[in-house]
Image 1 (cartoon, rainbow over the protein chains, first blue to last red):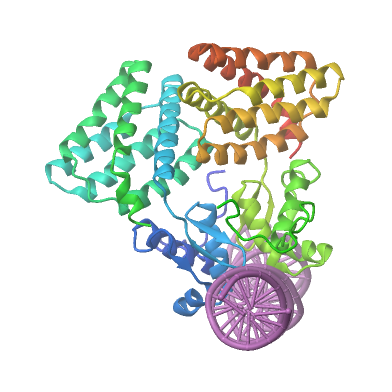
Image 2: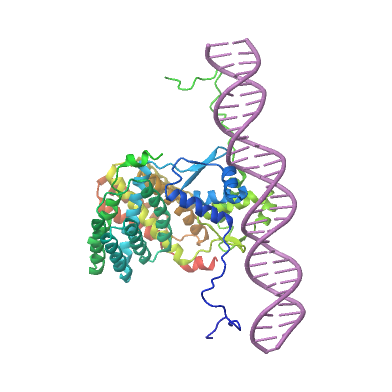
Length: 231
Length: 231
DNA sequence: CAATTGTGGAATGTCGACAATTCATAGGTG
DNA sequence: CACCTATGAATTGTCGACATTCCACAATTG
């Protein structure tokens, strides 16, 4: 049973990946999502099926289904027979998004403390953040920060939590894109994370929870007017 | 400004409600959802578009969109070019659903303690539960229980939490339908709730959190084989 | 002139037909 | 006999056309 599936006489080289067949609706959804998350498509923008179909050279069916996918992501809303638009972002929604994220991350910390997951990935992302801060590379810092939190949630070993967190994080991407470039000190952001890992390593549950809680709350601190103006 | 919109010469009687225009996809989605949540469509059942279209006398377009809606609800999954089916329910998913629900309800309790929401609705639903237990009416008890928890989440005044909880509760409906009829003592279930309200009224945060936490955990206690067998 | 009623455009909603893909199965080939 | 290859049925993916609905604004009516 060393070869569960009998190999071909002349196996394909590994680096020739199979051509993945991506349905049009997914391609369309990806492009639209990326446009929304990057802020190019701002909240309130109307999404007209016929216009998008013509622009992207596909029929309306995949456009409709793509928009429905984005609706599931919570990025688009539909008003029957009237139109679809990028969901407006109110200050309240932004606050709710961050507060729910806080609850998710606290839950992850609790579970990590219970199941004793290895923390290697967290240390690694901390290093990446430090390097980015040193290089004054804002984009790299943001990426490493997301990787850190993503890893934290993954370590909780809870698929439903992970899916919910990912969905929530879509909106956070959007919010960050619409927000004025953060004035925060890069080194400070990077420095916030190692204590969390340390508390986890120490098995100090309450401290870990307090740190992750404070940290996510700090991320939510911003001027709501920035978002409102984006409508 | 007593009449913001000028009234008609002869205003319509109140009991003539506007005719709601429900798109076919929504009707289809509602019917399928209800079938899934009631357990008539069991996990793993294949959903073939052409068959459903013929059966419901509509074209495939609304069927496809309805299925996508259910996918958003997390009740259906799609495998490209292969088919769609009612999402299988693993014991792990059931456990994750309940544990996430616990986190949501604890979050709600925390927020209620902070914003001092009125607890009238909760008292009322407790009464309903007691009445149902006395009448040995299982369905009424389940309905009142859901109403209690729904009210609890609503009092938290957090739209995103409410939406997430509702979505999660869909799966709980499905699980309860697949589960063997509960052997639990009706009076015991009803009796679990008033202490929670009391702790909220007393402003005793930790006790309220512990009670809601224990309560939702108790609801999750069941024989996983019941679900697995349902696949 | 105010309120109601008609009308046209724009958008979504629905349909039936065709294309593309997958899997299973039967048949070929060394 | 083991492995490849072709065929076909079943299913989803995509398309273009038509139907329905809504909104805004003009036309009408008292």
